[in-house]
Amino acid sequence: MDDSKIKIPYHVGIIVDGNGRWAEEQGKKRSYGHKIGSENLEKLSRYILSQTGVKILSVYVFSTENFKRSKEEVDYLMNLFTKKFKSDAKLYQKENIKVVFSGRREPLSEEVLKTIDEITEMTKNNTGGILNFCLNYGGRAEIIDATLKISKDLGQNKITEEEINEDLFAHYLYQDLPPIDFLIRTSGEYRISNFMLWQASYAEFYFPETYFPDFNNDEFDKAILEYTKRDRRFGGNHYEKTNP
Ligand code: FPP
Image 1 (cartoon, rainbow, N blue to C red):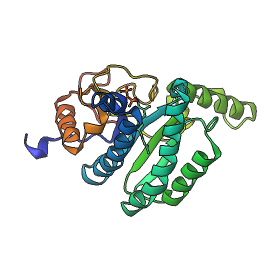
Image 2 (image 1 turned 90 degrees about the vertical axis):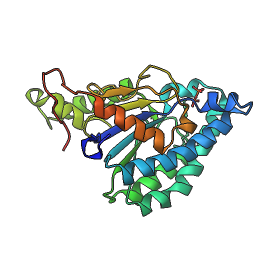
Image 3 (image 1 turned 30 degrees about the vertical axis):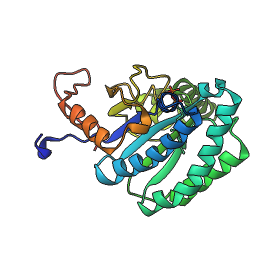
């Protein structure tokens, strides 16, 4: 395809899926899949934000529902988050990437919270793209949490009922980010699984069969070619661009 015709989404979402199956199919433990998946995510996110023109990347790494998994797997993932955020902070910092987290703090451990607060603080003034980790995240929970904040502000007369509209509501979500343009879920599962329900309302969806540990930079480039073919109409007749 002619490079000049390639459309680059402003905000990409990735539902990271298939680490466990990737490892099991090789006769290895699920935790090995998460480890390799986390290494892939670190490389892929830096590629996407530093080399493709995408400005925001939201990644679903742990849902509120994932706490239902075995204690062994949850503990492994929590330790992995702590370890990787600590070791990857410098890499994101070097590439001027701002790291933010979306989700509820309860019941994350003090150690995880301290690590995510540190990387958030360290990278807060960076301007080379935003990496939004959705951790202990649920789309419905986010909408409820926004509603509670609005209700509080109404009670304190900080806003009026007449001011409540979609734009205002969006400012009360965990992050004040533009909508998702392109949503990828790896591993051949065709579900949104409570990921960014508000932000993905007009997203284009892409469901590669590839398990996440194998979803590399080339796979992402293929996804962009697919996005380029999509005709986004937002309910109207013509292609419009929502993001700057
Ligand atoms: C979903 O299914 C994936 C997860 C619950 C975890 C994804 C986590 C990572 C890639 C680690 C991220 C690390 C950092 C540092 C952010 P699954 O992958 O368990 O796969 P399955 O559906 O094959 O069981």
